[in-house]
Image 1 (cartoon, rainbow, N blue to C red):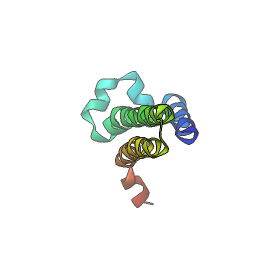
Image 2: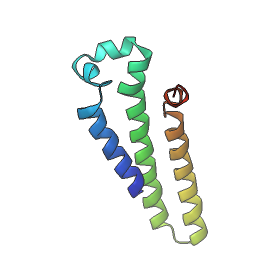
Image 3: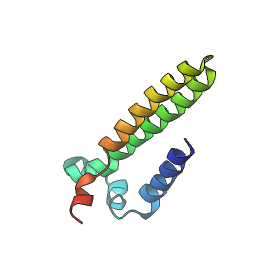
Amino acid sequence: MVTVDLQVLAGLLLYLFFSPLTRPVISNLSLAMGDPTLRFFAVEHILVMLIALVLVHMGRNKARKAQFAARKHRVSAFFYTLAVILILSRIPWDRFLKM
């Protein structure tokens, strides 16, 4: 959970202050909606990553409240798996393939 929190914090800092991709988007959101690449980084990527963060925290809290160890592990596995699937679905894999 801490790793996901730190990653989201780093991503938000990049998104809000340091990314050359999101600077034009912050000033003109309608520009991003017309361009699929900008829309991905401006809206889709950050929204799905925040949903994954919420899932990780929900899984942690629900597992903590479960009485039995088997239930704790099942709940954790369910929520963490959903979060990992969401995270992997919004990683810009094509940027890595071009390198």
